[in-house]
Length: 109
Image 1 (cartoon, rainbow, N blue to C red):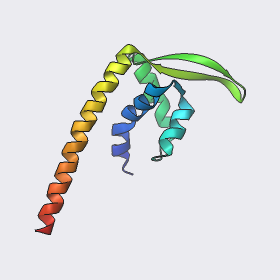
Image 2: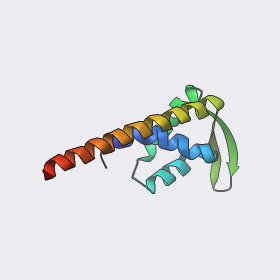
Image 3: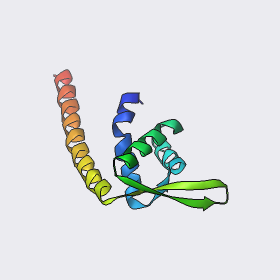
């Protein structure tokens, strides 16, 4: 998949996945990679930025499989931002779908 496509939707994917439950970094990588491949190193700078911007809070949980895991939880501002992103995505994806359909129809004519 085109790298620029992935970069554009990664914030949305991370925020949507954390809206249903708190998650740790590798868990996000794993879940997103079920749909499209991403490098583990792309998630952590994004999580740091979103935390710094106030969209996430973090907390540590002891793990039986190694060091404590840092979990990310959406803040109230994060939930508001997520709703904005989802609406923007819906409008954007509808517009792109329309352009694709119109373009394909012109090819058939």
